[in-house]
Length: 508
Image (cartoon, rainbow, N blue to C red; front, side, top):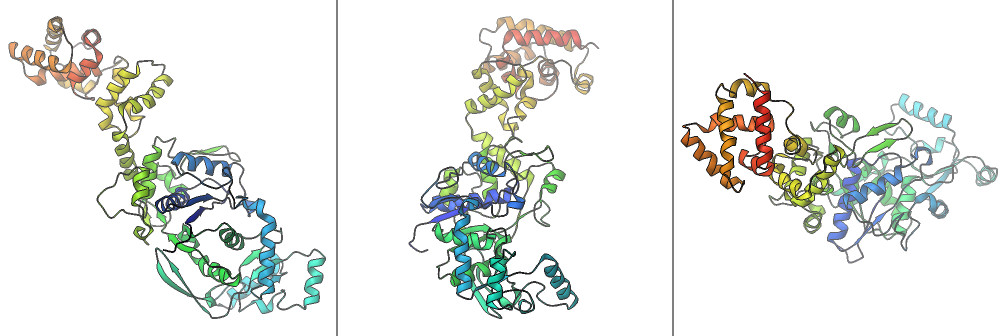
């Protein structure tokens, strides 16, 4: 590792919602920067104005905030290397495109869309190995390599549309190193003459990306595998401009649950799980695409899930806080192979993070659910309920399913349980039992257990004859934690009322 300042960037395009693949890229950049004592930059790459989507930039910023990914320099924070939105850096790029032309590494091209289409068809027909604008076809096209200099200047001066293309060297071996993938060598005969600067006055990704990374002092480019084919061009551009290139790390794809192909929104729709960090509202279609946040995931759990999609700590530990991830993270422990997204494992992570949260914090979150249902109870009571049921919960929303009976009397009773467990003598037994509660001074778990066991012995009754029917009367079904714990939380008066109601309602 070199000694220069560690500076990384997450550089999304605001062309739609941030997929979890993008979030993972941002997270790995952030973990690496924090682990190395470096800076995290957010740069918005909005050079493709045709694909710009209203609200996408705001969505990106909000998503990163929810995840706890802190930005040191960016569109909101500012910094010494701004602006951090490429559309506001428009005037910077042309000079570097011209510099490449001046050094013979780029050229003007005036071909129309129809002419380019014709070239593609011709190369298809000829079954050419390189089916694009390349060293093998450019001399037959309309560009500054084939047109006299005076005519080129005339075309530019008259406002004719043009692009600036990189002049790919012929049959040259380009070697580069990737932290994750090792040393890679590519022959330029497989590459084409990419457009660097467009006729609308905006640079393409390739030029803007290189220029911005250099001017912003980026030391490491950590990005998705889909950019790996662009790396030879980027390395060549750095060399052509006389700049040192940053170190590169290309992250593996996030795969479908079955491991076959890249994870998409369609997979989430099909499997019933989100693929976006937070809800995305598509203003043009009025569709809402679900996010992990709104699906009940904790940001800590979501970050934990994302971290393990391609990286492993080399230990048995799976549950990490952000601080622990920062301490453990190492790019060399990111694999090359695609990482399969497992929705059940995602739920497991959320369950684990729920278990380690303080009951008071969980109670506050659950109280929001209760208030929506018009139920107002002291937080202390909710915290005691949460403590009893949280082992069975993966999401805050599960608490209602697990514990609704603590907040409302059963309206009906499980028919199968009634048929199987409610015997002819059950009403008499339960009636005698609640009468005996007058003898209990402190209505808590310990005293209740002692008292009921004594009651069973005196009346020569088995535990199953009483406890299942008692649970049915209190809960309405067979769910819930221990009956003694339920009774203590409900209190003596509520227990007696519920048993009496069951006796009135369930009649054999």
